[in-house]
Image (cartoon, rainbow, N blue to C red; front, side, top):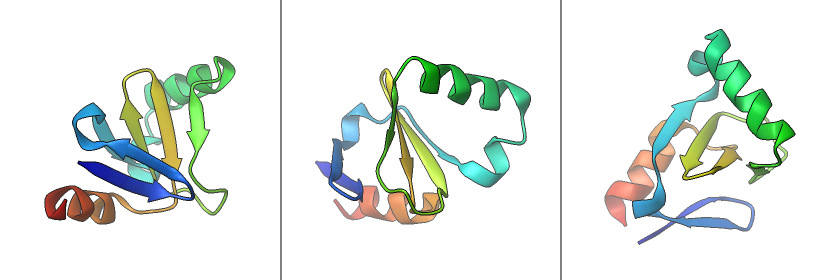
Length: 79
């Protein structure tokens, strides 16, 4: 099944390793370092340039999304 992450970004649901809330998970320095390193390596893909509410890890790629985590979970459950 495919999940719409906003903009023109669609991923296969079985490729998703994790869905994280941007506000609560980036409080941790390790998460901020992880995202910064991925950004430097060019592995971060912005699904939208609106205010980011979540990020989705799919293998080596990280998708920054405008949708909150509950919206993404509902899309997975309904797919």
